[in-house]
Length: 140
Picture 1: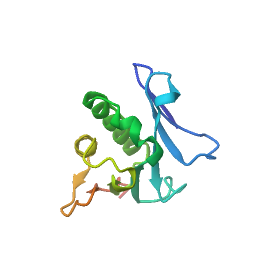
Picture 2: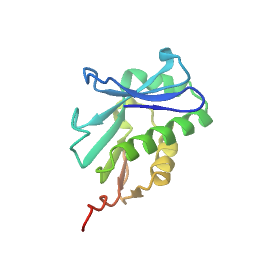
Picture 3: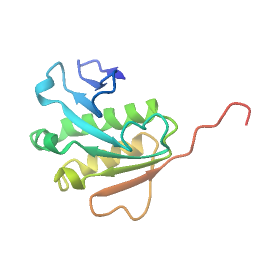
Picture 4: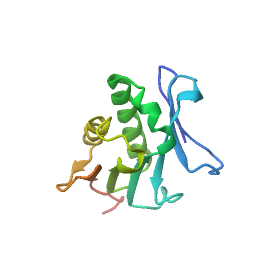
């Protein structure tokens, strides 16, 4: 999957699926790409409940970003994945493995709401929980 944005940034995934990560690449510079894990691994096309995590070795790249860049990355990532995987109905954004603390957490929460996800009470400990309605099947 590749989603390109007008400024040259993109959301990318290895088409051969040999790499489990989804990457947000700013402009054309892979050196500051941020990887994201979708759990369960390699099941994003069938799973209805998924967890999104920052790839821990890339957490420092988010720490180096300014808040407007984090906001932009969050909305592009969450909206892009949500539109591509419309069958997802439960989303957890787990910030714990990355060690980012509160950095970017609010941006990802706002992005999820903007992408049509509803927050679920009980989000805590670095994990945000969201739900959305399953898409209607034709003829139902």
